[in-house]
Amino acid sequence: MAKQNKEVKVKIVDGNFGTMCIYDDEIFFNPPLYQQRYQKVKDKITSVSKGTFTKVVDVGDPKLQFFQYLQAIPGVREIVFLDKDDKTLKDCDYRINPLNTDLYILRELPLNVKAVCGDVTKYDPTLFGSQVVTMIELIEHLEISELHALVKCVFQAVRPNLIIITTPNADFNKYFPGHTPGSFRHWDHKFEWTAEEFRHWCQELIEDNSSYSVEYSGCGLGPDNTYCTQMAFFLLSTEYQEELLSCIVKELLNIDVKDPTCCEEPVKMGEVTEGVAPSVIREDSYKIIAEFDFPLDMRTQEEKDRDFTLGRFYSLINYLLTGERDDKPQLNWGLIPEDTECSLDDTECSLDDTDDELVFFIVQYIKNDEEIVEKQRDNNGNVFYIVDHMYAVLPLKPLTQWVNIAADHDISHSLISMTVAGDCFEITGSGADWQGRVHLVTLSATSSDESFEKSLEDNDEDQDEWFPNDEHCEHMNKQVVGFSNNENTTVNPEADDYWDVPVDPNDPIWN
Image 1 (spheres, rainbow, N blue to C red):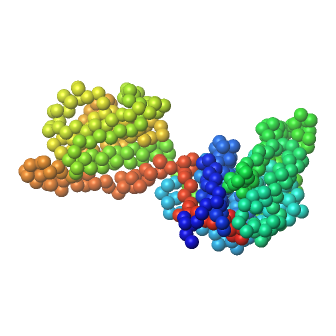
Image 2 (tube, helix red, strand yellow):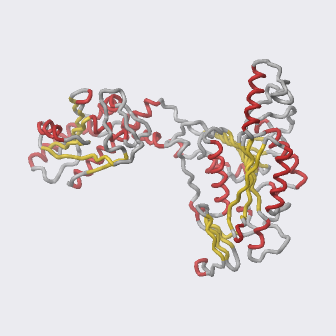
Image 3 (tube, helix red, strand yellow):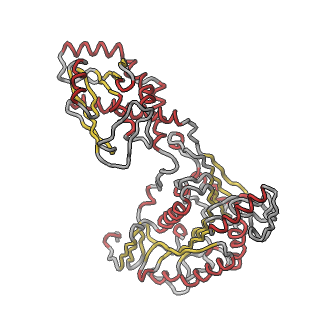
């Protein structure tokens, strides 16, 4: 029977996180529960980090599915995936391999990604310097006797700023249709804790590791406000971080660090990072299964501004050509202050983006250049001119507005005029009076036959001028870089990941 024809016994909407539906024989989460977990963990890292965390270690995800979320966190430069299953890590390393699109949409910050085979209960220098450690649906796959070693490694040896642990909530199991009391959701689970048991364990952790505090949350909201997955966020206290920094500074200055106001024990060089590494490194080091460095945007800011300017310039020309084909008045607008004045006497064209009033860009059709002077006396707005349907006249002020309307910072009018000069067949004036003239390829149907034939001849002679050359084409391809960096990269899960999938207690993918 199709899912849509089944009777929904219980339906619960968890705010912006997702929806849960209980049927007679199964439970559906939309989005799937594992996606909700990934998104909530990503959001927590982003909110705590505020762009300052650079290294993240994820433990227990051999399929590397969390990568598409982690790479979108602002500031992250190194990601380590740690698991014991070397075969699955190798089989799934394509998920962390840069794609072809990464060659075009380059990152502004470097990113190194490793898939590492190793045991999280044993410290290795690979973990050194980690600011975040995530363990999503991991601890239930370990024996309870192994948890002490895990805690010692992560909380005491690595000592990151943020530790995130998620695990199934046994209180939710009774809502699974056909669930047998006392049974676990997955064959490999060694235990499943109730919310009370999980919080008791977490409280013991922070009692033994007083530099941490804990916050609780969950995802997959069910009946009686019971979460299917329970979460704990452990945050390193700012007091400890300041104390550690003081110890590091004293060590670097060769000052006695046995000062009781600092650390109880001296910090040894080579043992200091965001946390303090253990004094003894085990011989059984981790094994790197796969490692990738993502392509980096090496352009200077001026080169980025030039490429961005060319992209906006070509979009304007295309816009004007489209209007010529349609033979209709043209208007366009953008979100910049309507009363903004672009001062061309200054080096920079200052645009205040705090106001969201609309500004219109208008195209006026004229018969000859002489009309431009008269029109400019009457026009105070952003106006471009098309002369006899043959070429466009682009004054500097509206051109500068057009470029900066989509930029994340103001690009100077001088750089804009210098960048587009090679694409103009004629330039007149300078400074605030600068104007560029650009051929329009498409001819209006209203042109006379004589003008039409003459235009074809002119276009044949000047086609090399209005066709972008190889260098310009390269700029057009590169300018898209200006719109993307690792701060606004969006998560793009595989298409089939977006479909509702039934929660099967025996299916390992959502455990």
